[in-house]
Image (tube, rainbow, N blue to C red):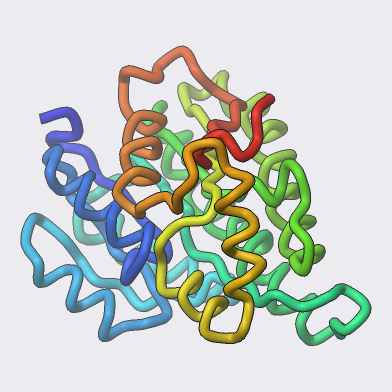
Length: 247
């Protein structure tokens, strides 16, 4: 199996894309730390099978992130793959946002990525290898109406990952981004339930493949970027959005 004997840490692993990533890595033999603020959800995913460990982590709290990373190291002695999936947003015109919302969106979607990468990288440098796959969004490349702050945060993830890839390549570490489009997740369903169905439908109509993505499709792209098949790829952004953005 492709990830046999490797250890992975997945943030946001309790549901949606994160859960699908956990399942894909487990299928390929990885030991997987399932990090999520939703402790019960992480435990449920851990109980689905495979060599998995549920870990309570709040990506906006650097102390929580550090303890979670140490828990994985304590259990398995190393971290070979970090996948940052944890994210959150709500659709609202920018003029109606406030600093509290800015802080929450930036804290979860951007600072959380900084915190996990900062906590994991010393271990990867010491072992002389590692892969980081950060999940952004096509909103971070093209902008999305009603998601200005989220778009900015995800754009920051993309730019950060490029710079990080340049810094860590000398240590045998790769860093890439997967940028999903609209995907069938609990977060998207919440947006639809909040009255954004017409906006979502419009985006689907503008997508050449004319449908939403599935968590499993995003997970397969992440799996590729984390695998040895992508051994000569670093600092890149792979869009998985049915052709919504082409560049």
